[in-house]
Length: 609
Ligand code: AGP
Image (cartoon, rainbow, N blue to C red):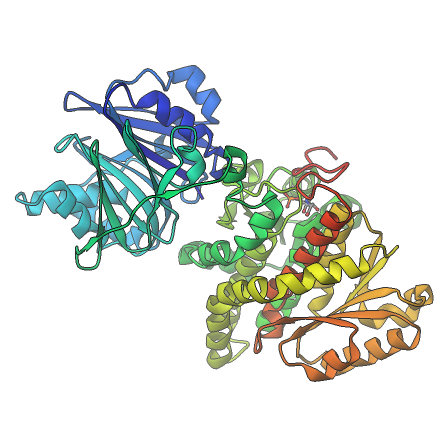
């Protein structure tokens, strides 16, 4: 997730406004920044890796001529956060500059095609194919206008994008286009603006024009023109008046980043499905050849590892060992050797315990792989191979969208391994792949249909002194995650363990009215989970069941139930089943009057041991 901005002013230089607007988009990405402006037919570009203020101190972003320009604040998905990978990107001639938010899925084939035509690429990004594509289109069709060349180039692009594009050939316009990544226009009497999000221009206007998927926009100092990319037909759309404050706008109208990020999960899960196949293949190859595999992480990321251990075992017959990073040295330090492989999972890529475990393994010559949400983080620099989860910055301290993104990537890895090892049928693989693709819609359905009910459940149990979270099989990982969420933002002591463990001690805690959350996908554990529910009910527990839609058997036993869509394979169930637990924790925290974005005693990234 990155932030793009473009503006054309009737008077004055564009750079200072672009700079301040990028600052307001910093929550969308902040590992690199760049601005391009045009003045007297010449392109000016300033860009570098680093936070906006750091780069500005070096290059003085405001000091650029021209009333027209574009800017970008980056969250790396392809290519580390280096100056050469920062946006804007240009064509060979430097006459065309592009900023982009999204993922171009076919960039490798386009890059090869353009390189064969003589184009020189300088970055590792997917974005850089766009300026060269426009350049090549104009070279082959010199009579095309800039707009026509952009339109023709867009038809070659597969994937998600919000582009803002300028050219010294037609220096008085900005062409922007949208497919899936957000794009919105701002207008006032002094100029026209395009941005990833409303906060970028809210200081200068509250008149916004929303741009839809498949639309191209031509901006000039006098206004905007919208056209459909499919057939170049005109679209008429009037501005709306935005009632948000700037602070509300950064949260897109949500009261907290946590609830915004919970609602973002359909989008982030779609992005996670756009990971380049060869990265998944490479990581799967390392795992396939591994003699032993440790899955190492902390907190929520550890729960993703716990779920992954079931995925790797059931789909690829690969035994893996989930280990708390803080325990890795004591538990495994002596046994790790050159034949060991470590898959470290860390949203921030900076967690000291996880980095410590990785360093320990590396000192013993183990192979270190990693999965992180922050490209360019320490974890990516010390791993032999890494994959980014493509979830965009997560501002809320509680991990939500990054958890479901980790699970999606780990499931894709397990499927890659299953194919390599031939341990499950192609039909089963196809079915699981289909369900993974459907997952964003399933999560969207859960949020849309269950959120109100979950608010009521949170109200009902807000004064409970303790919660149990129980699941069997892979749902044990989901139960652990539900417990952590409720503990860390609603501060309610919570206990989680495999449901089969209840009778080995914890059931002694049950008293009348004690809330027990059961995670109940309709899988092989369904029957035994019903037995566990009966055990708890017999001792007065109140059952809160997360069930598959229409599971009348468990719904009849539960005091409250939350439904997820039918037919989700158990091995993928932590992804959708975690969402109600995230919402339960969030609304319980609100009921208790806490700020879910800033839970007490916690930091977003624990960089101390
Ligand atoms: C999860 O909600 C917490 N914020 C915390 O447990 C977190 O998952 C843990 O600190 C690991 O962080 P990482 O994924 O950035 O390594």
